Image 1 (cartoon, rainbow, N blue to C red):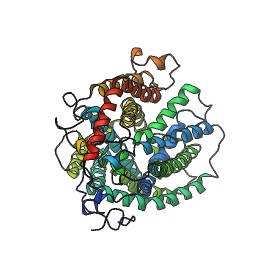
Image 2 (cartoon, rainbow, N blue to C red; image 1 turned 90 degrees about the horizontal axis):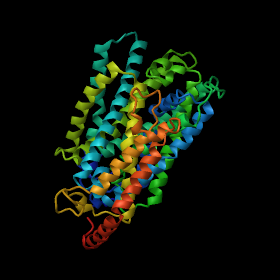
Image 3 (spheres, one colour; image 1 turned 60 degrees about the horizontal axis):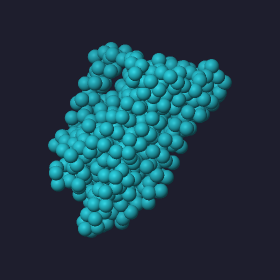
Image 4 (cartoon, helix red, strand yellow; image 1 turned 180 degrees about the horizontal axis):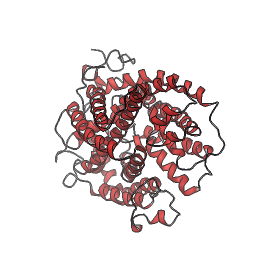
Length: 497
């Protein structure tokens, strides 16, 4: 039998449970060592395919609508994408634990307590899927108009239905298929963005298109960027690194993930900001329409760009839909992973039709991103701190147990210090959340006191991560360290599998 270390890293010889263009049979369950085919570079190449894509091009343009000068936007883009180190760190648990993020999360919160956080993540993944479908439909509408067809609301609904059906294919098939397709799409998009850069250089300007912003709005833009880059993917990391073997070098995983994500996204977002300097509407809900109506970039290239963008976004949505599927399993829904994908697609279909007929993309995205911060920032702090307190190890067999026989069961399946730290961290994140003109609701003053007293500067991420981790250490350190000792004893007695 071919071992995982001997298997072809080009994905040509994979275990039957995770074979390219076949339905992956694994979900939130443990991946046996004999089926661990991936290496750190495979994880990196997948994330590279997820980074060289049109969504980040649009994010760079949207960032300019905050009122930044080009140079301010560039600094936000560079600093914000350093947060991909967080994704690298949040990909280190999977190889040893052998399961997905919200399978691992049971250690920190307890099997039942983790369901609450898994629910937050499930909603988040659905939100990003809806965002992707909105972009796909937007590109399809522009292509239809250029072909001489003027679509109304019924046509938009048909486009959404078709888009949701197509986007289900990759995550339905599973992990190896997603890795393969994202790898394929990297090269053509590098070429396309290089050509777009050639068209952009003669027209873009680094001269101020806006007067610039002060430090409060600068921090809001930084929070927007960090959430859409490294921090916003941390709840997905181990869903893909779990196919690496436990002895995979941690520095290699972090290095490959960081280089494969931060570098291309800095370049792609910067290109989006540069195009904004001469195509103003590209930073709005009508981004693709604005791109189609400008004259600086040839019409034929816009068509090619939009066609490839549609394929790319389908692949990126595959990542979110795959993770939402395994998260639904972690929530306790007893269905196969691929059935969970179908369930999520039906839900996405309904919400996307509502979103595309009733609100603009930029408003929806702004509201959604800032609300994601409130739960994900404290969760990340708690998740990482728990791993550190456990001396970077878990007991894989007990992560798969959700009853009283699990080491992680605690009190009624809930580890209350983690829940308390999460709630306090969420309050802290909300207290530092900037209520910018992008968000259409107003927080009560008592809920965001920090922001109200700092001219609406955004400290949400830093407060959420820091307070969540600190409260967890204070409440849980002694108990978790004691449990870590029991983990090590059971690990020593448990055969590798």
